Image 1 (cartoon, rainbow, N blue to C red):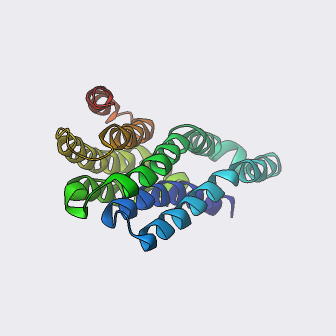
Image 2: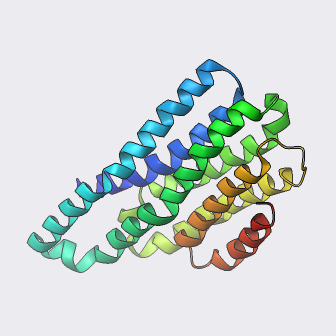
Image 3: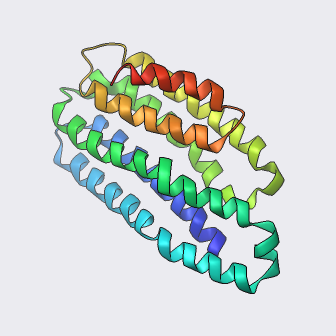
Length: 205
């Protein structure tokens, strides 16, 4: 049960953060889109608020179960650090940029390319995060595959932001930068490539 809680938190924070960003850009200025943004914001925030409780449950299981103590300490610690650090930053930047983009974008077409890249990043990461703690020795291999696909989406989004006329350009760059930091945290193999992307995105802020 503790595993499932961590899987759900990781997936929910990432998926709902990027979903509120995509929804805001799909229908800028529309009341329905804003309602969807708020709903995703609430789900991601609730998942982050649940971290302390789930961490206490994990520690309780760890002290009472030899299997938890020997097998899963690294995986759960890594999941906690991912949630408390890069995932929290991604949520915060998406929450800010979603509201700004919903107001400032003049048409869906003007931000369609960036939105498509954000959806690609969400798709690449979500399936992996749903099984993050359970992968064991296969985690790095699976992480590298997911991170590479996510980084492709980030790079496409960055190319779209090379146009200075894109609405909320710096805030969208921050979203992609925080997504890149998530990718770096997930995979040691992809981290050097992700760092190059991060430096390029920092120039757009």
